[in-house]
Amino acid sequence: MKNDIAKIKPEIVWKNFYQLTQIPRPSKKEGKAIEFVKQFGEKLGLETIVDHVGNVIIKKPATKGLENRKGIILQGHVDMVPQKNSDKVHDFEKDPIEAIIDGEWVTANGTTLGADNGIGVAATMAVLESTDIEHGPIEGLFTMDEETGMTGANELKPGVLDGDILINLDSEDEGELYIGCAGGIDATATFNYTYEPAPENFKAFKLSVTGLKGGHSGLDIPLKRGNANKILNRVLINANEHNGLLLHEIDGGSLRNAIPREAFATVAVPVQEVSALKSLAVEIENYYKQIKTDDPGLKITVEDAEMPEQFIDVETFDNLLNAIHFCPNGVYKWLKDMPEVVETSSNLAIVKSENGKIQIASLQRSSVEKSKNEVIHAGLECGILGATYPNWDMISFGPTIRYPHSPDEKVKIETVGKFWDYLVDVLKNAPVK
Image (cartoon, rainbow, N blue to C red; front, side, top):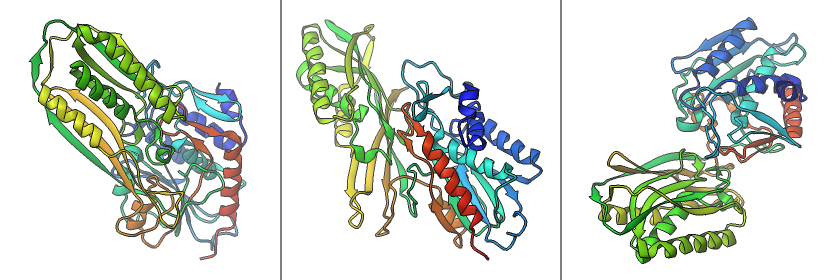
């Protein structure tokens, strides 16, 4: 597989991307990738800096004759979203990504691929190591922890970089140039609960919502894909109302910036309501398949489970159901001047019970603070970096990536070549200072 991926043209990009797939780099635990990039710059004999949080800056002088051009910063993030299918055995802190070629695309076997933003990082590395690309002064800025906190961008200090133009390589539609992005904020609610003893003549089950596509909570939110937490809650509400349902535990979603694909709950109903519960699950599954045509793989299953000794108290359970039901999810508003672009959205990302607490986590994105028009409804680091370096001109582009933040993530091979050719041409034609 190494030879297959690394030999895709342009090889100078794909070989670097393959190397990145072999390095575990989930957000907040991307230290090995930081060290890899650091050593890469040092081996090239280029000035290499690692700042106080782990951002790596590699500086390459201009090629002969282009010393008078404006300096360009090529920027991408080294971390990736760790998502996998429930039946996939994979440790994102230890195991490499199994990248595979699937027709016109490169994808991964049951996990996120990390093309977001591994392709951008690989392209920057390719520019830094190239000997035949004409360019002015170049700085590679490799940021850390973009996916969970924009930590690298937020912590970057002024005065470290000398360039005039920042090119962010973290966009995901080849042929499109992005000049703005959405801001985001996390919202977390916590319920404290107590346990009540299990009643007699109840039977326990594991409710599972699986098979959804999920995806990026910004880019894919306008596709109206199913949210596993919302769908599971619909089952729980109906079963609680009609079948006397009790809840022992709940676990839905895993990352604030990914649309939840799976959600699970251990529940119990009176023995005489078992058949009704199973019928309800089938009914709701069929309902969602009719209205969520982009998620044909949806499955709602009811499996026998060992009877717990205790259940979450009824008052808290009722409050939880209401909170999830009324929690905004999906597109809230579209931009007036760009009606195809989302202005404001919310992703009900995580619902989890543990140690006497239930946590509900959501991510709100908006392209407006008050009335600022933006272009892409996803978080790019440009907005944060621009506050630290206000004199930069900034733009973002990249190859075509589909379903980022999900195990269906894939990058279109042909567009990587086009993206690379465009980047090389931009560097060659950098404006004079």
